[in-house]
Picture 1 (cartoon, rainbow, N blue to C red):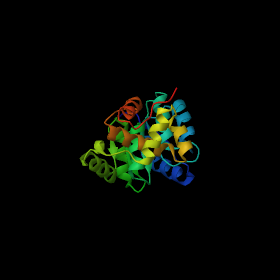
Picture 2: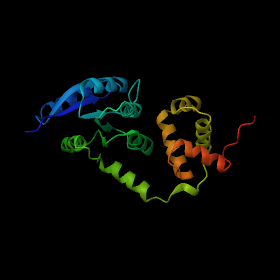
Picture 3: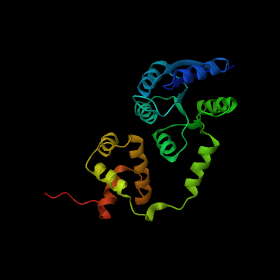
Length: 215
């Protein structure tokens, strides 16, 4: 018999954490190694406890889920992250997956679906709720927006990136969330037909969207 899947539960609602921990504790295939109340604690516990899978909420006080997922990737933590949230809009799904989430599930998912998703995540497989999978497929099938002009907000984000600001700094200056900045960047990349920040800035200058600094 294989070892149980080690699970870390990250959610800022104690009742939700207790419910998830109790559900998985009843199944010998899983063992809950820890619980976190926010993203920062999830990162700390993931490094200390070495879980196989982290169930990660997105909206949490302090460090949010998307930021935590990115921080786990930056630190090289090998745990798979399965997002478990109530939100399935593009502004939530895309930043989480871009940050490195292995799967994305909604909190109203049936117990059996959640168990299957955690097993799949532990194997390194993608696990998506049907509504999220349909949303991603619709985006893939949508006409490429590369010829569309950048919106006013996208131009603001591009200018801040060109000035050397981080996503967090741009979010603070524009009074929006860091996840929203990342979503704007994804749209900018698609419209400019580039893959990263440096290329977006270069193409912005090339297209005259950005003005060279005067000496």
